[in-house]
Length: 233
Image 1 (cartoon, rainbow, N blue to C red):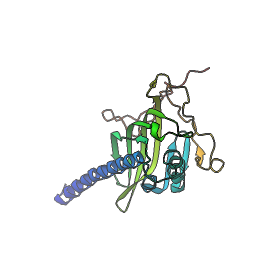
Image 2: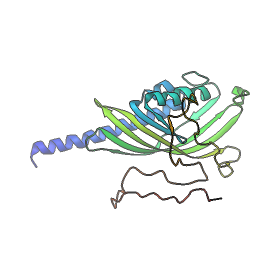
Image 3: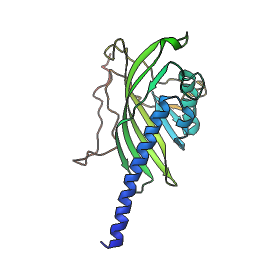
């Protein structure tokens, strides 16, 4: 290997490290914006030709992402306002990130965990927003794209795994406590463009959201199974 080749290899390796840092910043920014209901800023993180998978629904393109964040979420959690509301708690820490950048540095994949705490304070409660406090755990499996050196979210798949109230925890969560989407847009003005086939259900189902990466030691592809689904009957 010539000196020029070695320099080119090192520049490429450094570029991948810089890409990983940029993607981590991108996803962590997503979490911080989501915490405070800055939904316009969230949508701006997505590629024009993006896809968002959430609670059994598939939202396509920036228009679909906007329908979810600046439509459904903004109306539900921020009373139609872009920003935090008095007495509303919505914490979305981005944790345990594992990022892989493709050799061409134009595509990347990442997995994150979130442990959310949310609720409505009694001083902010109303008939349509009663006092409520809950916990939630989930995993993101995302795809990112780089255009002119700027990373954006290409595909966001949020798999909520469990919900639990602060009073009773997750052991007593009723099945399908948050049901999967069943009505698409435009019948539901904030609904997904299509329904996800074989959409996972919440706890107590414990099926695995497939990993985007090979085993780091054996190099084997991950093969999912159906262990952990609801018992029949």
